[in-house]
Length: 359
Image 1 (cartoon, rainbow, N blue to C red):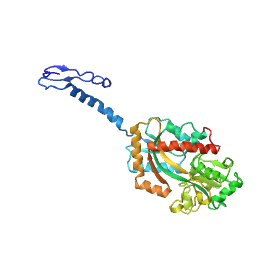
Image 2: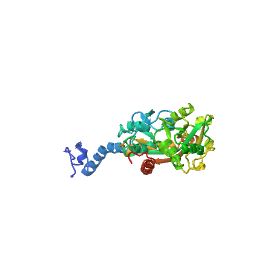
Image 3: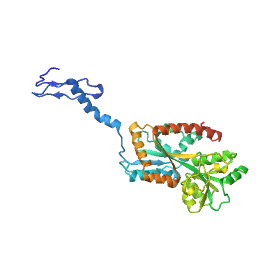
Image 4: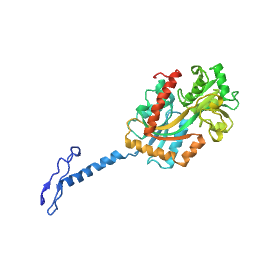
C-alpha cells in the first residue's frame, strides 16, 4: 500500500471467511499510512477475542442441582449433602446449589434425570457403583459412556449390621447360618446390584453360599434398610459405613463385619473385617461426581477445580475421618479410566453371580 491515503476510504476484504464482513477503515486527511496486514490482524483479534474467551471459560449462570439417586438419609445422600454444604459455605461456585433426590430403580431414576440435561453443566450427580452395575443387570440402558465423569472423591466400605439384641453375634456366625439355609435370614440391601448388595454377596459367595437363594429385601437407600432393621422388619442390613454409625454409637445396632482390607480407625476399630473372619473379600463403594453427556472441556475443567477445592477443605477431611471414608480424589480422565476397568471387573463378577442380563 502506498503512503498518502489522503481523503480516501479503504475496505479491508478477505481477512477471514469466518469473520464475515469487516468494517471500513476511514482515514481522514493527514492520517499516517497504515499497513494493511497489521490492520487486518488487529481487526481479526478484536473480532475473535470474545469467541476465544467463550470457548476457554465457563461458569454456572443459574442454580446447580446435585442429583442423588436415593431417598434422604442413606450414605449417598449424606455424601451429597456434605459436598453441597462445602460448596456453599466456601463459596466455591457463583450461584446457589441444591440437593435433589430422585429415588428409585437402584439409582436409575437419578441417572435418567441427569441424562435428560445433555450438555448442561448445571446438573451434576453424586454417583456410586450402580452406575456400573445397573446396565449389566438390566436396570437401566444408560451407561457410564453416556455421561461425563467429573471427579472421583472417596471410597466407602460396606458394613453388615444387626440389632444390639440379635442372636447373630458375628459375621462368621451369620455366614454359617446362611450356608446351612440361605433363606433363613432376611437381609436388607440398598438397591439390587448396588454396593451394599455386592459387598455382602461377595462375602457370601466366598463362604460357599448360593447367593441366588439369599432372602434379600430391597430398599431405596441404606438409611431405609437401617430404619427397617431398627423396626424389627428384617434381620440384617447391609450399607455403607455412614448409615449405621449413629445407631452403632448409641448401642442400638452392632456392626458385625466390614468389607475393608484392614480395620478402620476410630469407633469402628473394634469391628473385624471379613478377612479376619475367614472370608477373603473386600468391597468399596466409591463416590464420584458426574455430569450429563456432551459437556465441553471448559465445563469439565470448571467442575474439576471445584471438586479439587472441596476435597482440600479441612471440613471435608474431617468428614472423611468422621464417616470412615477413604480419600481417593481423581480428575475426569482418571475417573473415566477407573470406570472402564471396574465395568469389566464387575461384568465378570455379576455374570458369575447369575445377575448379569447384559454381559
